[in-house]
Length: 383
Image 1: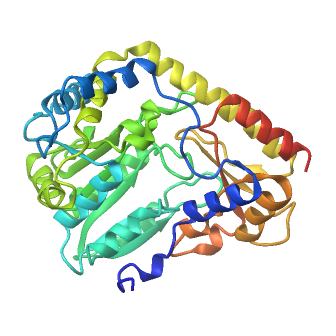
Image 2: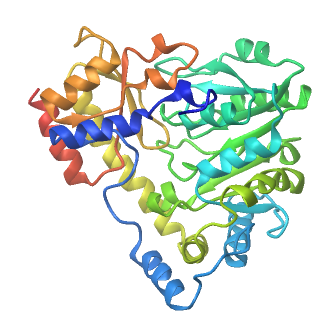
């Protein structure tokens, strides 16, 4: 029997669409995991860590090579000075980091501001922390922040704002002006920011990821999350990390020590190798490859009569299908699976406050081999 806290969430839409894709032999552009391997040298680092005997419990807050590599990454990329021993913590994926941070920071009845469309674990984490979500809606096609509405959501009960940039599922990269306005509101209302930056190295067309922790007054009120999954294409490793001021790290660690205690030791060593040994050529190649994948799929969707929004980050495309299909997003996604042979995500589940915003949209993931995308394109063109 599912608890009252989790009963409203049911089975995730990702699991449901993957099940349908398998059932109908569809090409799966629904769930956001690569169908290709990450760098061979990093896989070998994981093997070497196993052989070197790194197979017992790790330090709960993370093995030294990884927390040191995270600190060096934050300093090298963003100029953020971080103490690896007190201002970094490692989790079993950024999702567990989100959960542990909310359990550690929130009290029952606290309010949390979320931007919708929202990654579906955020509201579930808020519910498990017995807090109250309040939603700022990002609307298709530009997904700009309505700053007046955002300001109205802050109350004396507001404890946390969750920011995700680059953003899943819209591909939005929050602009410097938007980040400055969000920072000003959080400082004015003494609100902590939980910043999910797992797509930090996936930005396109000159868009630049700016961590909100780098803005004036924000370093000491921001807990920043990232992971090995998106940048290095090891989503199955479930190795994530947080960096930020020691009091926020302690809060997340207070929960983490009882949720998983420690993350897989050999994979932490391999994640450290990824952060510390891959240089600029890797990151430049990553962006070039994902830009090519995005640019393969965009014209195909437009050619179907869909209206795709241009993503500036992450690896998803949201498209409006209403000019070609009479029905909601669930019906359209089912039609794609059953009649076209391509699986996508119906995103109304990502709009808890305004599901009507998502009922005209569909989300495609382009974190796939070019051959996979070409095969999907052939099916979509033949529709």
